[in-house]
Length: 486
Ligand code: PHE
Image (cartoon, rainbow, N blue to C red; front, side, top):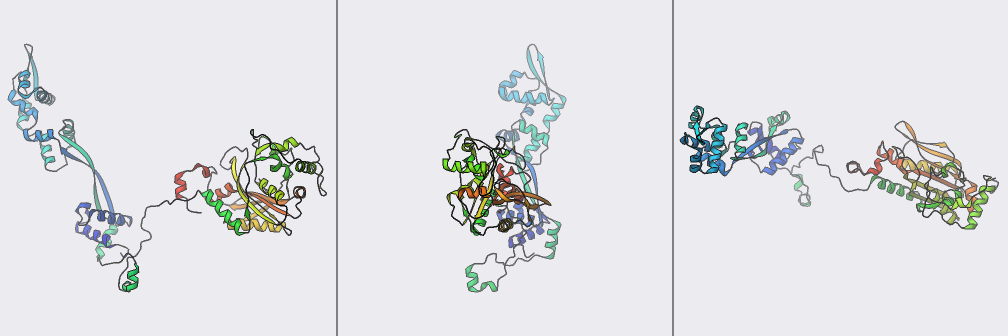
């Protein structure tokens, strides 16, 4: 009761006065206010709104003429036995046609052919009918008097004869529900209530004396879909903030890279399956990217014979293979180049960027996706720290259960994969490890480098509860609207 506004109370009282049901127009209130109050009361289940589609009619000029003069076919009575030509002469060709047409159709007259002329012969039925008021005429009278409940077959005929026009209208009735009656029966009192707290009311102290209207937090309100960023952009922002808060700086790179930086510099052997055309998009234009000869020689040497106690891969390095242009397959290319350009420790950098792989698209795979890449390069960096950073990151992203599994990457040792628990299943979200000496020593990096590359879309799927990773890129507007802010 206390959550009812004065207008709602007023409407309830009005409905009580009308025995529980009334058309909005019958309520002694402004129509807009009635409709507003009714919709609030409806959401509180105190009233129902009954809607009925009804037909309403209006007389046309022709209809008014029928009403004044009677139906044209009735006038034929005075012409019994006359020739059709005489009828036409008296009433005009058009009207005569209408009169005779309808009279024949109704069985009121027959046309007799005699000596090449046509004559009117009124039937017995016709004679009787023409003396009586016809259903059409009765209906026209009703309509003229504002009554719209007309036999539908008669209305159809009058419509066809263009005597009336039909339009459809919605008739509304506001009806008290059982709960509405309960409230009404308890007795409703309308007292002045304040619905807004203004500075004046506070200053004057008036608020102490006044009664305030209660909020009904369960009341219906239309959803408003405010503009917001795409969920992936929101996630990227959140991840940026997390790494920034942990003391990292952001770096970036380009989509097109050489096999040298994407793979060779990371000690990925040139016959590694991931380098296959099946897995990597190689570019036609440019199909080659030049590499500094000295750098190339260094990396070739490490691949062939190793460095700092390593024996390398023991194969013959192909420098042309190094120069092949490709779409980067991981963002580890960003961090290795950063280290090459910034060999002086310490460093803590990350990137969140797009990578490309020749994957067939399905519910968990995309050929383009984002990786959350990062490194920590400092004297005391160690494996425990790596686990701590990743655990911290995923915890801040909202994951409670995280676990690490041993893994293998050609450029890290030790290596591990990170998995999170989602709906009872462990899901792999990324790889990490400490860069091998074959990677670091080549570029004069002296301290350990902790490195990771994590999938963004997989994580987004889990956080957004998606069954299909493609949803992220469908731009389904309904889904986007209804998605809460992250
Ligand atoms: N580059 C790896 C991948 O794309 C992830 C990774 C990054 C692994 C850094 C170890 C170190 O899956």
